[in-house]
Image 1: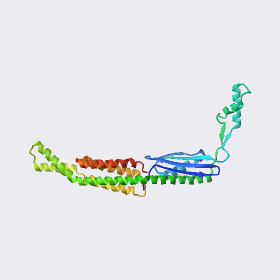
Image 2: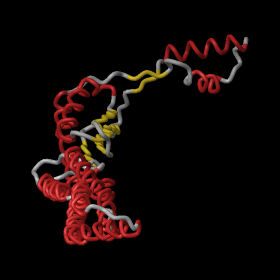
Image 3: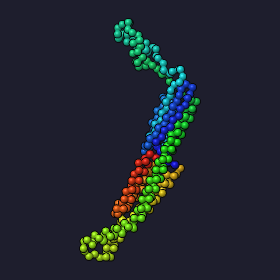
Image 4: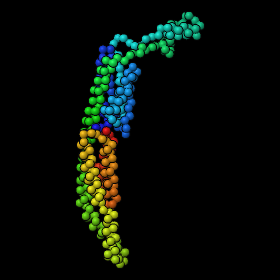
Length: 288
C-alpha cells in the first residue's frame, strides 16, 4: 500500500510542571530532509529522535518540533541581582548624580546582557521516556495521515491506468487500418508521380518501410509496464521512486508509438494516453 509524503501528526503530553506538545509535518521531497527543533535540555536526545523519524518516515521534507509550556508556579529564569545593581550604578555614574529615578534605571539595566539568567534544567530520563512515547504517538498519527492521503491517490492511479489500457485497445484495433492507410498513401504518391516502378522492388521497399513503423513490440511492452505498475501499486510497501521509474518507461513506449503511428485516429488515442500519463506524473511525486 502506498503512502503520501504529505502528512501531519500531533501529540500532547501533560507533565506535573509542564505541557509538552509534539508536532510532525511532512511534504514531498526527493530525499529525507529533516528539520528538528527541540529545547536545549533535550538536545542530548536529538540524534535518537532523528533516527526514529528516518526509520518511520523514510523520505520527505520533515519538520519536527517539541514545544514546552511551563504550567507550574516556579520559573527557571532568575534576575542576576549583582549584575543589575552594577548596571544601575554605572548608569548613575554616567549621569553624574545620585538623584536619578531608580525605576527608570532598573528598566534600562534589566535589558542589559546577563541581567537575566536561566538555570539549566537537567534531563530527567523518566520524563524523557514519557516524551519518547508521545513522539511515537505523533509518528503513528502522521503515518496514518499519509496512508489515508494516499488512498485517493491510489484510486486515481488505477483509474488513469485503466484509461490508458482502453486507449491501448483502440490502438490495437486501429493498427490494421493504419497499415492499409500507409500502403494506400504510398501507392497514391507513386501514381501521382506517373512513373513505372518494379513491383517486386516496390513490395520489398514497402515491407522495409512498414517494419520501421511496426509498433507490436511497443504495444507489448506498454501492456507489461501497465500491469507492472498496478502490481507495485498493490504491494505491501510504498515505493514512489520505483513507480516513478515505471511511469518513465510507460511514457517512453507511448512516445515511440506516437512517433511511429503516421495515422491520425491512432495519434488521437496516443494523445489521450499522454494526457492520462501526465496526470499520473503530477501525483507520483507525492508518493513515498
